Structure formats: structure tokens, C-alpha cells
Image (cartoon, protein in one colour):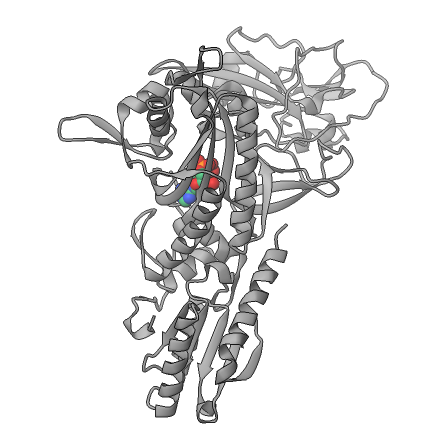
Length: 586
Ligand code: ATP
Ligand code: MG
């Protein structure tokens, strides 16, 4: 491809909304163009990267035995009503009416469509398992689209769905997908970590996310310093050891106007780890289709921990939740906010009370006395209060103990979620009554798995992991061009002859090359080459008449080469770059 004929509308100024390198370079380098919030044109350079990622994804999916299909973006409401998600999914679902007033949605994910496709065509266990995938446009009306293709509203996803007769068959395909995903991100030249994840509103009970590690990542990961445990903070667990000490007798102490954990612990010469914090939430649940109810929950957790709203929402099956106001707390608990505690609390029956396991075994705790300006010291269970069970509702912290090996400490890292694999079970097949006949001729709901990869997000994450002050430094596997050929002086005939011959030679050797044949200053050409970010650059300059060109690697290495050696040298560097990026995998 010749630059003079190629459409790369670079920008002089970066729009102020672009906060992170990938977004800046994708706009400045002419990869994408914004049309509306979270909606983008993919320009030739951007599309080329996406297509390279798609090709890597397709190859691994096909290798795993999955079959490619294509489902429509426009999905009839009936399918979503059948699964129950029409009323559950909320505002991310873009709902549309056709001319006859029939309702549709623009598919944000395709469980309903695939269940419909498979259940109408597969009747017997003999036809199972089956794994179907597509690479297709999704729409999610994200509340805060940002960072370009990283969190877009319209975006390309690879989504796969597998159908099984039993759990062990699902486990096997899930494992195949796990391996395929590892190959995909390795073959994209990216560093990644696989973490245990929350299943969100897709459903199911077991899932893992593939995280591209990068400082700008929206997700927080905790991994163990001594074993392989790694989890999204939304899911991460720990084990708590509260120190054993002798029970003392509870006493009431005056704490005038002192409410916050920090102030109370200072005032009472203690530490937040000795306090039991009480939080009240209002949450909404669906009691039947289109019928909702607002409820309240009181949660007790150790003073040094924050509550995870994700874990709480999952426990309560909440559609939404928020902290209760002081007035709501007074009405629900007949006690003042800031002084709540588990001792002698007169609560109404509809209140849900939950205890985080961080307070299990906590001796001589400090708690609110359920009256203004008073706390209790030396509170112990079961003498002073009891809970039926303790569950995990906390946000686990760096330095906490690994829940798996029980030895290592958890370390924090940031990541970008590019892929997610789920064991769905029979959630959709049951709600949509999708069944097959098992070995005994009995109807059973399909057991399902589903597996997503964000194609555009992977491209952006690749930049977040690979950039310098001048542009992206793409892994060679997904760089828009492997090589950029730059002719220094377009008016020099020898340079033109050498450059054109070399360009043809590279093309015939299947090297993906962009020939910058524009009549521009070298500075301009170099700047643009930095934005294209190819790892290998060949400059045809002053020594062209001696048959010598310059090799310029993005990593900083510079060398002079005989024209005749260019192809073998490029091949050598491509092989080396592939090895370097493969060894980067965590
Ligand atoms: P997030 O928590 O980031 O919103 P998600 O859990 O909603 O992601 P999934 O439903 O698992 O995402 O979708 C599968 C993949 O699709 C994700 O791993 C991600 O790579 C991609 N993806 C999801 N939402 C977006 C988006 N708004 N823009 C770009 N890619 C997305
Ligand atoms: Mg989402």
C-alpha cells in the first residue's frame, strides 16, 4: 500500500476528551473517528488492526472446533421476554420499534438468539456438544462511554455459545475456550492475566476474565504473591484471622458527635479493625415480571473494610442499590445513623440483616449503641449479639491473605477486561424452555457456556500496553503494517528506483508494508510513521546510490543494510519480535 493513496486522516490536535494514550493515538493517528458518543467510524488503519485481531480470534476458534455463524443485530423483543431479560436488563438495552410498532432491541449479547437457533434445530444428545460463534456488532447504551473503542456503545465482539448434555461436557469445552483465549492473546503479542470474575447480568456461577495488564485499566486485579490465584476485585476473596483474646464485659461509652470509623477508633484509642461498621442500603428487586419492590438491608462489616456493592447486589439479587438516607435509617431501624450496632437492635421484619465474615470471631468489638452519641466497647458474640451466618461482602485489600494457598499476600494490579468466559448452566435454556432428549429419552434443558472477546477493546488495550511519547508501539502481530518504507527525497531518481523495487520485493515476500511515497518533509513522515507504530522502518536516503538503506526499529535499534539483505533482515527481525512478544505472556 502506498501512503499517497491511503486514507489516514491524522489530527493535528487531540480532542480534549481523549484522556488515555490509546484514545489519543487512535484519534490523532486516524484509526477511528467519532460520530456520536461511543459510536465510531473505523478508518482504514483502525479497521486493519481490528481485522488482524479478528483473524487471530477466528483461527483459534475454528481450531477449537467452534463454528462461525452470524446473528442479526436487531432482535425481536419476544425472545428477550421469553428469557425474562426484557424487563431485567435496564437502560443499557437499546429498545426500538418498527413501523408496525413491534418491539426489538439492538443485541448487546446474543444468548436469547442462539438458544432460539439451537433449540429449534437440535433435539438429541447425539448432536451435542456444539459451540457456535460470531464476530459481530453489539450495542450497549453504556451510561458513560469513554476511552474510544475501550468502552464504546457500538462495538465489535466475538461471542461464542456452547451447548451440552451435562456439566462435564461443559467443563471440557470451557477448558478448550480457556486454552483458545490464552493462544489468542498470546498470538496478539499481549501480556495478560486470567482472573476469577463476577458473572454480572449475563448469569451463571463460574466465570473468568482475561485481563490485559495496563496502568490505565478500569479493573482492579488481586493476585497472589506465591500461588496462581488471581481475581477481579469484584470477586476476590481472602481469609480473615481475628486475634483471639479473652472476652471482656460490654460497656457503654459516650462518643459525642463522633460517628466515622476513624474518629471513633481514635477517640476510643483503638483501631478500625476493632470496630464493627454498620451500613444501610435501599435496594430494588423484581418480585414478578414488571413488578418491583424497594427493600432495605443492614450490613455489618469490620471497620477497616469497604463494602463491595457488587457482592451485596449479587447476594440480594438487587436490580439497583444505594445507601439509605439518615431519615430512611431512622424509620427502618428506629436508630440514628452513625451509631448503629448489632446489640439490641429493634428492627422491622422486612429488613435484611447481613454480616460480613470479617467480623467472625472478632473479640471485644466496638459497635454503635443504637442511640445518639453512644458506642459500646468489649462487645462479644454470642453473649451480646448473634448472626446466623457470615458471608463475604467486602472489598479485599492489597496485603490480605490469599484464600487459596492461605500463605501468600494479595498484590494489586490494574487490567483491561478483554475477554470473559462463563459457565452459564441452564439459566437461559430453562427460562426459554430449550430442551433436548437425553440418553434415556427424557427432556433436559441444555447446559450452556458463553465466551466473549471485545475486538475493539483488545486493540485499544494493546496500545495501553505498548506506546511511547510519539505513538503506539504495536506488537508486530497486530500492527496495521509490519514495515514502513520511507523514501527521504521524492525528487531523487535513484531513491525512487531503489524504493519502488524494494516495495515490490517486500510485497512479493508477503511482508505487510506501507510505502510512504508522499512529497513531505522527513520530519512529517517520521511523525506519521510513529503514529502508525510499525515495529520496523526502512529509510531510503542519501546512501541509496551505494545500494544502502537504513533500518530503524521502533525499539531504538538503527543499522545500515545492503538493499539485497533487506528481506532476510526483516524476516529475522519479525521472527525475533514474535519471540519477544510470546515471552511477555504472564
Ligand atoms: P464491562 O464490565 O467492561 O462492562 P462486561 O462484563 O459487560 O464488560 P461482557 O458482557 O463479558 O462484558 O462482554 C464480553 C467482552 O466484550 C468484554 O470482555 C469486553 O472485552 C467487551 N465489551 C463489553 N462491553 C464493551 C464496551 N462497552 N465497549 C467495548 N467492548 C466491550
Ligand atoms: Mg458492561
